[in-house]
Length: 305
Image (cartoon, rainbow, N blue to C red; front, side):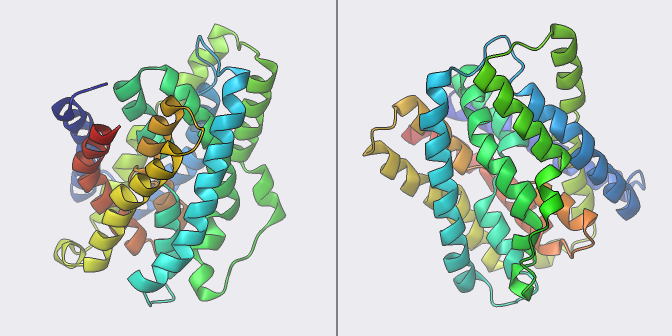
């Protein structure tokens, strides 16, 4: 496992991409229309390839790993879903943004930041466990992400076609690949990896560019965002870590899940807001602050493992 300082350096490198996105907006290389188009490209093209590439390495997740990790992942998101509706009532009383707070409490940046962080902390084997956890994550975020964001306004509407979004189709394919233990030809896996690798920098650049429209002083003085950050980055992962510690779950799965649950807000939230013409100010603020604070919180979490 990496040292505390090495983990800080890893997280700082990722956060710098947010700063670069902010600068790109100020320099007029990025604007609202560009952000929307890039968001659509990431959600519909590069993110599905990132999901596919997660099970196209030299080593596939072992069949015996699937059930315990998947069960723990489903349990975690069930707990997060319930907690989000309880905690959000104490954090926010604005019906127009309370749904964004619920989304932020449930979904962490496991695909875009979690994968590289886990690889650095535990080695490539951990990515395969994360790929299994990403199955319920992807199903929930692309099926119910928008309904959760708009839930405070009484718009929790599920659309059947969301079952067939590009990301969910990619998720279904990964399930088949894992169950069949099929090794994808190197030419295909390399292509998927190359396209998927655009997702992480692209999503972080969008967050930075979106923040250029937010008043920094207002954001930094928003106490609710800091409370949300503490609950999401430290309180929830520590509580679930303690639950998993007294369960039969293997420690190697527990460690990976704890780090994944301590990820900053999923950058997909900002892109979903842009794509669906939803006010994404609160989402951008939460994503920025949690990403910034995760530079310290993730190394702290790694110390308890």
